[in-house]
Amino acid sequence: MSYLEIYFLLLEQINDKFIYLKSYIYIIFVINNQFIMSHIVFYIKLEPYLKQWLHNSLGNPVVFPPQSNENAVIRRFLRKRPPEVQPEMAEDELTAIVIPDSKAKPPQYYNYLGKKAKAAVKETIEDLFRANLWNEMSDLTKRDCGLNKTIAAWCEMHGIDDDYSETVRQKYYRMRTSYSRRGIFLGSLTRKHSDE
View 1 (cartoon, helix red, strand yellow):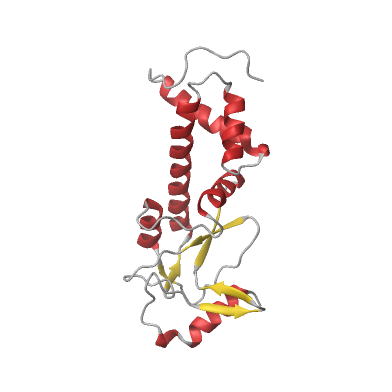
View 2: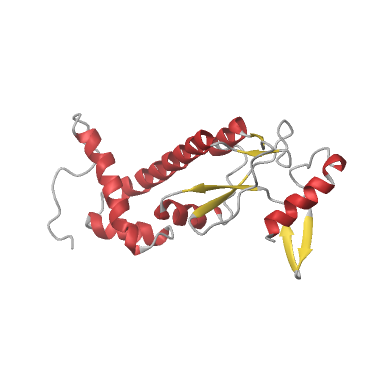
């Protein structure tokens, strides 16, 4: 039995004793001499580079800042778990995201996101990634360094494996190209021939 299953079992047994947990109070369980915090999470499938970037930036499990757009979207679509739906279990390809505390929707009761709600959360994560990539890269590309090297260094700085630097480069290039097709030039108009 996993820690998450044990946690939900314990929550069910003491369900009526909980009114709500304030954001600064956590329940701590000790199992096999390990402390288990009461963060309730949901799992979402992300591209590997997004997962690595999120873990590097916001931890594992991912904890978004309290007033973030991502938390607002999560809170908006949270609902009580349908009785026929089992709690999600951790898998290697899934990313765990902590459900934010809320007086209106306490996580111990409201801890379910449907397929379309998860798609909305994924979209906010992708938007956050694009904004971070664009803001940091637009300043770096003005330097006298080739785009491939710059993006590889950016990926390294953000915990993204070298295997995905080409994916990130293509994403950045598509963003820049979509503007240039409309006559808005956000990067250099000359090609750097020294890039390897």
